[in-house]
Length: 229
Image 1 (cartoon, one colour):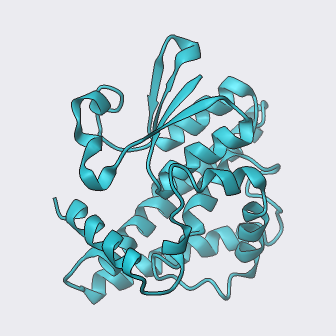
Image 2 (tube, helix red, strand yellow):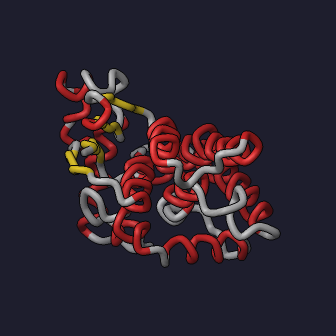
């Protein structure tokens, strides 16, 4: 049994989608990040960086793993699934996983801060992070022009990038011209495990819609307080 400490964010979905794809037994431990639960001592004992997701593998002497990319690599190696066994294939998956970890996630995350959460709108910062997010999504689109998936067969690299790329509206990034990316987004969205994984620990998909609901404004206000700390 694996305990999954998570919240409804792209990084959190990466872990829950992979667990669903691998059909591993796990228990969800929701971490309410808007309420600061990630800073409590009991969670910091699992992840000293105070971020979600994290897992505790009770089948491996209660081994704790933090950092979403590290979790995906650990589970892939544990199960032998969603990652090739040969060195070149494994490297290719790792390269596209690191592309998400170092680029797509951080840039879209900063776009979210300046476009969605910051009360003071600094247009140069918004432009900077939206443009870089679009550039990175265009890299994915170019890769997907001649490849069904990012690194050969469907893998943890696809899951990691998909969990972020699917939120492009929230970051204010238009992808109508990225047809290969759209095809790939739809392909993964049709997978039952992906559908299950992105509603864990709660379904916030309607927040990603391009509207101005009261629930969305409430979420933005809470996130604004969190990022300003």
